[in-house]
Length: 466
Image 1 (tube, helix red, strand yellow):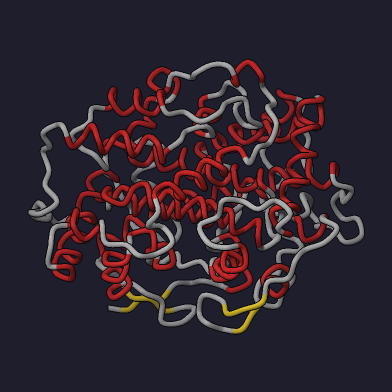
Image 2: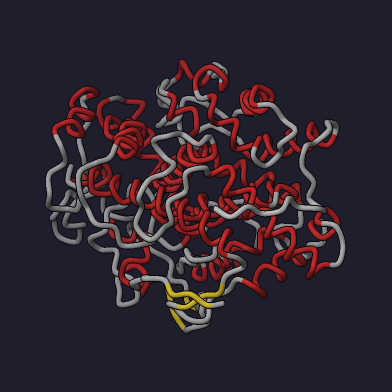
């Protein structure tokens, strides 16, 4: 079957168009979690992190820093150009994380016909994708303007409660514009604040080639227009990265046999925004943390997250149950296409995500981008996920149902990445910035395989009408 999105090309960077308004409770939680970025100019450690953010971003974009990317640099640049387009309706552009066989089976059923029309694997899968995107995208969009000029849309002031977030910590907006010599409204800068790398960096390497829909393109027309004009779209956090991690996490949980590869795909998608010259490393890390935080609360069926009326999405009161229905549809479709078990089909991969060692190395490189520590106390400690953010365990238990929440939280604690980064200020939100889901998923899969499971991928449960 076919469906139509309401994608407007000029607004692709924000995933969808959302009406600005007063911040919701979940908006406020995310804004508070991301707010430590606004105090970076206040300390020597923060200033060093800001300087490194600028240098690392420019060096990655130009190729001075050669990352352990999944493809040779020139080919990765082409992948970055293709990753500009957002397939929010069905996540088809992320499906290569599913492997050669499963990815092909997915795309045969869920693909984009043109910029506005797409096909669906099933309604259940479409529903969870829509609800997840409609949860995370508004939070990213709210953050862009809040951290640029403390507005909801560039013009409308935020609430006094939102302003209090910055007042309490001594933070100020437009931290990138002010730090990099392009304060809001100055010549060449974003009118609202937090100008992007293609505006602040001394040089941006052009990328020329076909975009996702095979149209001749380059990074300039996707940064400065006409295909996408980001000149007055604040940089932090990255909306594309928010979408990329949201979609990758949804597919990872739906197809846990490819969890690690899907997480790697999310990291690649975010990193590609740096290659395009559209985002800083901090933008990408902020989008990743936001998406991970939101997905954990969705999978935990947090009352503040489920049963909400969201733009472009059905109301889902039980996100865990909705994911189970979607997974059953995925299994049915994949087994029909593959003719073997999901486990066997998942191992069939000849693409760029088939090398586990390369996946692990690349994912690890994006954890901190080697930015300096801002909070030394947290750098030398392990933060207890079970005590600080117990809901994080649902990122694993919904994918691997035989695990208990306690086991999942322990795995997340034991596999944490480096701490003390610019968001890891001791807050619960900050813990999400150091979760290493690649390592955690590997350990979870090993433990789950040794435990009896109450579900089976071969014979999915019968669906109940919602």
